[in-house]
Length: 489
Image (cartoon, rainbow, N blue to C red):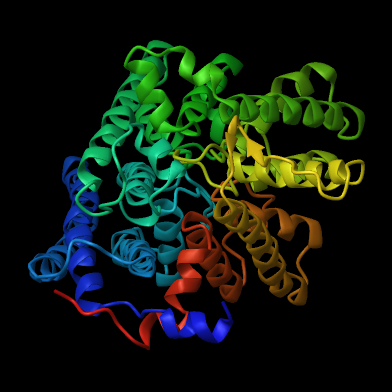
């Protein structure tokens, strides 16, 4: 079919549908603002409390009337993507005002809120320990909430019916009704997410982490967010085993919640048999080896230091958790490159991790393998296109390749302003990849003195990374808003 033909068939979004479900999600996001309000009251921070009441009012005032609109239960894919993008933009915007109560300029408060709701962990603030407990716990909570929201939205709104949707839902139930099926899949995600959070908190308390630090790091690790209450991040928690425990929690957050659910329901081997999980672990181990060697041979560190810090950094980057046991800016170029690769790939689909995801990475590797394989095969030979034990649909391959290309293009476009403004090429590339991968590791480029334009660039990157780029592009694609529309019942 020609492009002209597809243009005729394309359908613009129905505003009533988008507004209704945006309203419903706004009501659910009101819970995001309740906890910072309660935390502020608990710590006696009246200014933060008043500032936190504003987004709560805005979300309810916006959400309640809109959620009562009548709209069909079936939504188009572009409507789902638009709703998802607008939800995260709205969440970051309304939560800017509470962070401004900490004395931040509005742009820095917006950066903080965007980093929190996208589970990134980058910050333009100089010192975490100079912030109030209310601020620290609130931004960790927003990471936790953002991590849960992205899974629920992915299961209920973004994914088209098919093998991937069924895999993430963790059941054989059909995913055709993308709205009414949200609640069942959301409940499963919530159960796994909540249990892992409680277990992580108890484990950190058991190894001697103070309750406040345990709460902050549990919320930030299971969401693979990375915000810490210490300027030294992981190093502030104490000895190596405690730091490793935080990243073990993050590793669980970077695995598919549907697999974790199945493992908890009597299929403990589901995690170990899954090729994506095995690939995640192998990539973590490969990254650990690469960073350890680079640190010992080129970074001027002893083998004992490299063996201790290398695996922590590798797991932090691969899971996109963003915690760091040392100053990233002081690392050698080889270690930084290995971290960039890990941040680009990221974690498992159906998890809170960012990056292009393990499955898409495996698809690209399989396509490269087929390209080489075909050179030795007869011209008319048919080669099955399989990844992780299942046959790939052409649409899955197209989406995977397209997203990898979009990811690369976005990195280049975002990196260019840093180069124009004279920032270190390699270090600025590192921070751009970190923002787009929703990781949070930084070489020091992201800080109080970062140019305002570049703060905006990184905010956009964090949103695009969390929404996997396509949703943001759909939001600004003219045919999304203008054109022929389906009749609304």
